[in-house]
Image 1 (cartoon, one colour):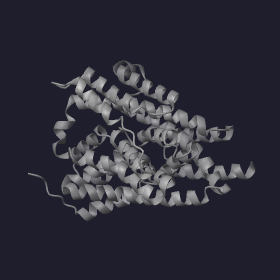
Image 2 (cartoon, one colour):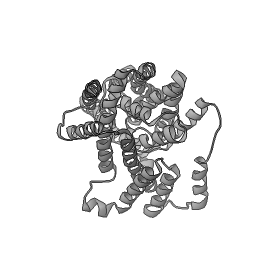
Image 3 (cartoon, rainbow, N blue to C red):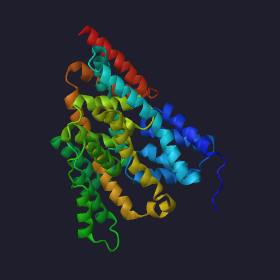
Image 4 (tube, rainbow, N blue to C red):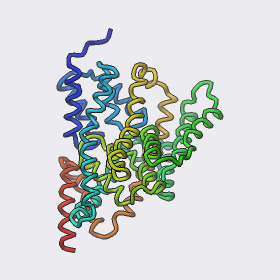
Length: 387
């Protein structure tokens, strides 16, 4: 018999609204806040329920923290709980990035705005470099002899993803799917798998081209971003960079980096940067389309398997498939960081800001990213005033 919730749907919704408004630090920090608040302090969610939600969020594609919030809302209040928790968690940061998008578009040509993003953009390079390192060690293993020997295939997938992303300067989704299938067949091949027909189906999902209105194209692109990118919020960066800058030419490289910076200085899930990107491309309708298209797959991938998750989570084939994809995507993230850094750090001073940001995050444990970016913004203004 299912245990009755001793908190209301309104209480759960207001909690996630508050977390989405004040929760800085990225997906790992947000996950820890949820565990601390809902499991330890309020006892709304059991330790086992939290672990199941975290496992599902890691197994399915999409932003980790948003999926976990949706699952925790689902635990006792099913679809209404999942829907309200997800909306409450995402809406504050969405509103913030749209407002920042309006300011960026209105004042982006002014020197003070450019100066702010000069410093912030360089600091973001240091932040995402460290984040990609942490993501690598968290998903694959520590960079040592034991891990290299134990996870040889995963490290090879990581290198392939990093090199191909850096050399081609775009992300190849078919490569990631192929790696996932290869690792699944290698580690835990499902019984009765028709390899040829399943591979053809997966390939066909990624081989379509559309010449429709820009909003339709955006909806398709961001839906793919939400449906086929595995890992934490930062794992979506190389996919977005490839599609938004390289393939569709919706934004310049600098505008894209500014979008990542905006996501870093606002609370809530980092993936909400798609709202900022959508606004720059097609105004408020573009922001809404980009956000809905990105988060809809995340919502569906969470609530649809939730009832039977224990069986899904213990499936060795699914675990192997996701492990292979994750290793390649993390490698692509690292490769994208190198590409973005190469294009953004155009002078010695910006390189110094990036390096100092990285060092500060490593050695000042209590330093939060928003404070670092605020300091970087002030440094950028000072540099531009002097030079």
